[in-house]
Length: 166
Image: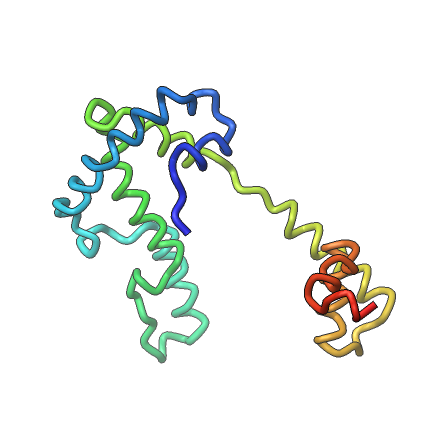
């Protein structure tokens, strides 16, 4: 599915993402694509982040240094994200070249991700386990969790099974 900037950017609810901003943003996109294609960013030449080094050290201690720990940054989600941000940071630093894209990237990068939804699911899981116990089968737990987190399933079942099911 392909999204357009004028559909997605307003969903962030930043006042900066108005119609003139989105129009300029869309005008910058071909230049940004060319910039990326011609970029000589050295993905492998970057120094490992301190968090990645800490994770590697923890793995080495876990395996008592007897096994080789794979230190390929491509296999570590955190290090991969750090390098992607470093790549985009060079564009953010160049405000005059891509002003709209730079602003959008900075604003979106500042958004804090909330763990509320995950915490609610675990709270529901705790309720189910307290009521039924730990001996339930995994598929029963999954169905109960789905029902608790998604509410009334009758409409979903009607759509999936047709009206003859009820």
